[in-house]
Image (cartoon, rainbow, N blue to C red; front, side, top):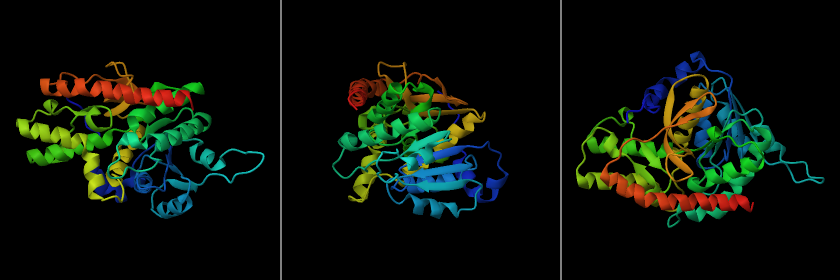
Length: 347
């Protein structure tokens, strides 16, 4: 399947950004970042401040957000920036005005909030803490920006996206076009690793990566690249793409997980959602409600438009090698989805 890559122009765009931001046309668009003071949130907030697609940036976290907002607000782009904290506890309860301020009017909400993964932890180990965080934030989105596109980064994405969807359903505002798991980092890794293996510029590649966003649920479709791989390279690349997050966790030796590359991927995803909303032709992989497999949620190429996901596209023919991984992946993915649905039911 040949896809128009939304990643290809990023390198050249970044080099020209400082001189072009004021001349680049864009509609008014507010982006909220929830978890803006964290390891992903801070660089993500900076990148969103640089984006010519953004005119207002609402940052929120449980601590440190005013400082992050003050810092990025000094970057000379046209977008305004605010940073809010949870409202002080009061009686009678008055709700979280800080979170409401960040969300009100947002067209895209990017959610990297949660605890990071540490050595020896799987994404599933993060479930109990991050599941509650995502449910709380999804509840606030249902109240303050029910029409926003949610770009969920908080792991385990295979479970947190269903959690967000079920919470929105409880509030009667669920729209499958607007609840997305950000799997862009898997595509970035695939492009990078394949480019190095083949000796080509990774910015010219767009490797489809389907399934989920954890371990063997991540399936890069190397057979669709038009490139030739030895059996050993195909095996090594597939596993490295699947477990690229572990590579970073181990290299950081307990100091965190993939934050900078994830921030970049979240920025690319959010900016492309905004580009699609103003009419650009955008196709990119995302983990969304889907009927193309037996899994209720699945990452595959999606066509984005003014209202979010316009079409969940198929992933074309896959090789016998990829089919073996697909057959292994699907039961695990479905179990992780059900875990999220069950959590939301009792939340």
